[in-house]
Image (cartoon, rainbow, N blue to C red; front, side, top):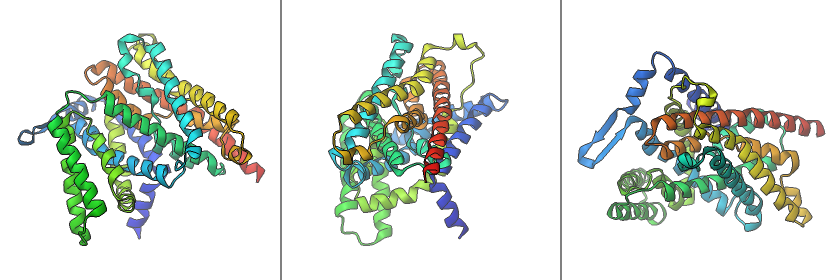
Length: 387
């Protein structure tokens, strides 16, 4: 009974938000303590398998290895929403889709205007929304909010993640090994066959084979030059929906309790520069400002335009507008997990700017948490009074 209860807790959106924030704060604190140099050396040390041509630092085993499981779950949720969920028709997807595009384009433009050409490679960083954290914040302090607000935020964040996945696949792939890429595609196809069409009735045997084939898909994706997290996306999209949902449900406690907190801890393991705010790079300011301000401006403007164009009364009732739209936009500024990953990829070769980028993500997300959390509480109180 106790174990079931713990799994339920680990699956909750509240726990995901609290664990992510706690792990990031702990990582930042320890990095700036006496334990900092030792922890940094540990996560920068390499764990290699020469026979397999794999040489990754401990930190990259988290971002290129464990985080694949998180992206698998994201892909399963994305497929569900696009097929039978809130985005299963063009009409349903239009408003959150346009809002998501606005919430990507405007932060990118603000970032580029502030950061300039020297740090232009970081443009994708403020474009992301952290689904787990955003929904977790609403679950924590949003009791009484109408369901349509959560649904709109979920749809927007899912589409936002789809855009992030495309960005990772296109802009952070280099030196493609087409033989390895072909093997990865074959492994994904084999995974789909075993999960959708295979005639293996022994559940344990099929599960084992699926895990082995998934590892091969990850391995060849890693060797191909495409970022390894794309393997998780591909596997989540092709697996039989029933099996995919069961797998995601089984993996979610591990993801929320171990993988995401470990990633947040690792990403936040940076030393705060002993400089004045004016001496911080323009990349830091671009991220810190673009995340909260860009998301609010982009989503509110785009969402308002859609609301003005929708003429059907029935459709208008499902739209999110006014202060509710502002609330969603503020919460969407919590970039966190995906923004931290984008920062790692964008500034991998410049550790100083990468560390400042992490701080920018944490500051921008913290501002979004304060603004978004306050608005969520106020709107929730407003709706509770109406009941």
